[in-house]
Image (cartoon, rainbow, N blue to C red; front, side, top):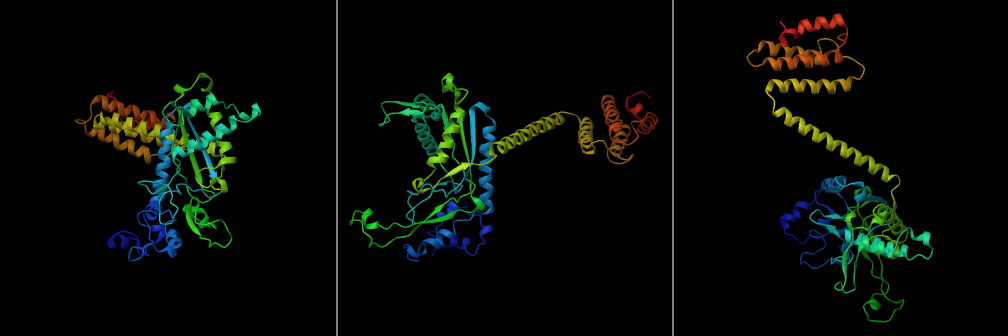
Length: 405
């Protein structure tokens, strides 16, 4: 069996170690699917073997998947909490999507191009959740409706007539594509076995003498992680929904997880999911960490910009202060030995400032002296004592640096 590509491309995949491959599953499954004979006819007996070669997520694909999921999380961080909602879920059954797409297996699969990674389109998520909301709103007992009404459905999901022309309004919600993280970094294989192929094709009546035709197809295995993200343009909502649209959508997700499922073949149990334990707590913690890191990066960028505007001598002073602050945090209540670490650096700077008189201005020397006076007693043993600090000041020639001698 071979892929429908030139020989020099196919040789690139020969004898590759699966975990060192750089080709994501979607590329293997589509462009490089190795199920053709030398005369380019389909090898019907080799479909299963060819599919097995597409299952692994190599390191490159894992990195791309993590980067895309991280990008979604960072974009969400830029929104206010009242304008976003994230639901972390874990599949309890295999998940399939895009089975109607054309493929030599007779069942395709939806991959996000150009990354070659499995995904669930946001439009599909919207359809499932709208159906969930409609089912909840149709409950006979008011408490079971969880606040859902036809008006809330129209406001959040929009409205359109059957011909999509007479009436059309956009909903306030925006559904993002979901990028599943497959369990054990592998996709899976399933088999369906139609027993009445002739009947389905309209060739005969249903009977038990037909020949079963096993068909293999691709799935995301059970126990995979799914992150559902949606945003809301609250300016499009009536006042009554501003504070509780997230509560309504959580109820819709819960109903979809319990009764509907996502993707294809949900009628026979595929696409079933559940809330991922303490995922909301972990997601909040991860979001706080990302925000803290972003703040630190901004502060460092601003600090570097300030340093760039200073003279080389003042840059040395500011760098000393930054190192001293970091060392103070590292040491805690401890202190460095005299003539080591930051004390040694201070001595070098003081000597450089005094001996390079033409390079250091009086203001720069004074700034250095003030930095040394501030930090050395906090970092070096015994320098917080009056007599020891007096001796240290004399050796550092702080008076000369300050222009007092």
